[in-house]
Length: 261
Image (cartoon, rainbow, N blue to C red):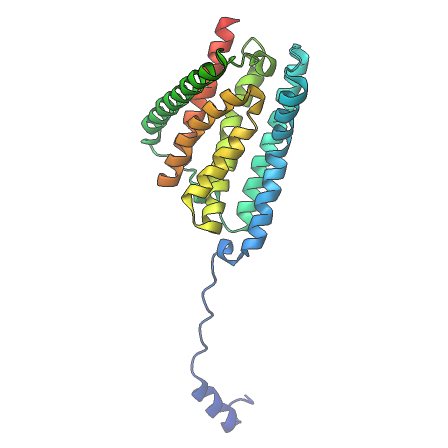
């Protein structure tokens, strides 16, 4: 015998109660994550990804000046950099996954238009860097009577001949720098402070600072190049054209180095 049907009080209660209220819709995980936790994750990623190259850059600039050029040491440094950058990108992917997001949410997707846009960014950023360098050189000459000494130690970083490890490093490095220091850092600061200007300044500042091993004048001209990328990302929120433009710059610089050696 069905006990519910034998209990008229229970039957009336069930009829009056009506359908159950639907569960409230859940927020995306990124919105559920407290900003304090997202800030901590940002600092964690920057410490793992940017801490080592920043430390190396300061040691090279203030203490050593140049790095050893032996082929075995260069291969070791490039291998260590590849492992460190690949691990940093894996950590970025995990942080986004934990927040309910993906790399697409910070601008990584492909469109055919990305290719011509990347070429335009490459030319514009190279031009901006060149103009900035000329202005710095002119101001330095007016102040000291000497021209700025160009940084000429790329061979200590990449060697003098093309190799598979160099190509892997250059390709990975473009994704590493632009996904972490541009797309993720800028998107987090925009979410935190709602300021495109602050996000761009912070991103360009970090990215330029770990190039100080090239000297302050060269670092500032590189900052002009990165500023073009920051403005484009702030306007479009797309990162693949910037990654490609960065890759073109690195490949062109490496080709120039290897050709002259």
